Image (cartoon, rainbow, N blue to C red; front, side, top):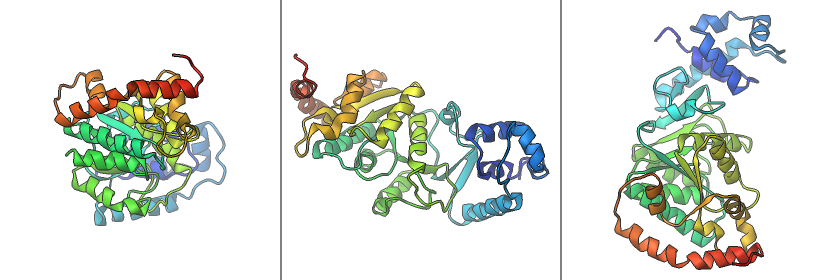
Length: 328
């Protein structure tokens, strides 16, 4: 074991600390004793604030040892911010996780990832386009990163895996707690593809509604650009969009996210409509992304798909203009 030992894991498990505070500790402390010998007064002086309900360091150490046991028995790995293997794009975040847990293989830092997210209850046209876009991305060698949720996330993972590239999913639970359980086959396929399941939460952490907004910042950070396929006005996908903009990533909405629904109404797409009104570029096919990123690739399916979506361009414009009461 190196000089740091399990210091980084201990720091990541300390309760009631902000990510930035943990990051500061990772940079200042150099070995386990730097932390283990700290008193409450020492830590309050270091943090510059009071700490309520000071943690039991022996309990933190016991939790870290349990994680190490899981790491060995269940092929769950972890990498800390201080390690060179830590995904470089995550380092650029304002509040990167002190530790990332993962199953599988971390993304190749030299290859761009495409973020794709959206509603858990998509329209048929949006579900189809999510699959088509992610499949085309896979055929072009682009891996998709999403959240393994129902709906758009699941369709994005499935299409991308069918395209023949490694898949990546960021979870709002431990990487051994697949949620929803119906997506366990997709999770297995992601691992079989040579991709990874990633999380900032320790193994055994159950899914929590508070975890999902936080994990969205990691999806955005790992991505070169993010597509919001379809989203209502109140949607977690819009949180991902906000993080993408904050982090300076490309942000697009899929054309199906603006299209009159076969079932339901445009109100179910107000999130993506508002993003488009605010200036987000509309994506019809994966070719639009490849052109934007200067990736040369010819694929028969993409050509056919482009013809279909281009033919609906005026219909989409008219539908959106009518909803917004704009004359075109």
